[in-house]
Image 1 (cartoon, rainbow, N blue to C red):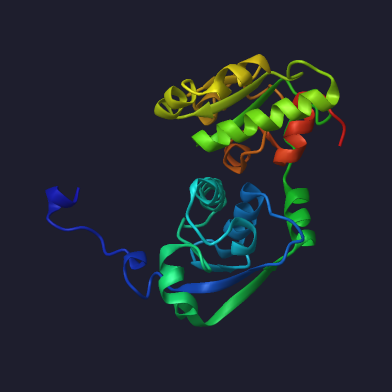
Image 2: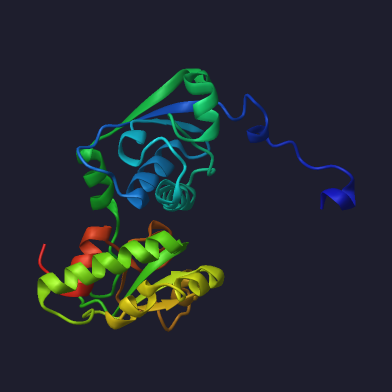
Length: 252
């Protein structure tokens, strides 16, 4: 459109002032917060504003490696699907925060403290819109946004260990891990692909959101650890730990 009309709108977030944070988020949890749950909490609070997040580097480090990038991928998708603009600064981690630090925080910024109790409050606020709230899950979708190569590998190990603990050989709920075609291609070249297949988990590049938006699927009790899928469909949210217990037939 810019090339057609000769100019583009002036977006405030592209300016130095527009990228300054008007919220300071203090993460004070006793364990690593779920990326999807933390992103949801922040997204619903800051909305169109920009947050500067302190304390998260304690849990995911101060380097943008595969693990931290996968975390921020899920975190960012959750903030955006719950109302935020998708721009955030993480103290000691994201590039601008590393370069400018607290200079990115606007004067008079509001403070939002996220501890264990606050995350639990957010979790408990999620509605269950299944026709039968106590229905047995018929399908589990993981990967919205699509899982990274490292996530596929780490989840292979998680599922294997959980199945070993329960004595089951395969997952007890049909489970689909979704990823991008190129990631799926790379994963299939690793030893993990056959190992994951042996657990009964299916790897696909299907879009869970499009699948769930099919009217025929809305009545199905689907579980997920994706806040994006929870927000836009009838899928029911559970944490990664809870999902692992449910699909392997374990006990929490």
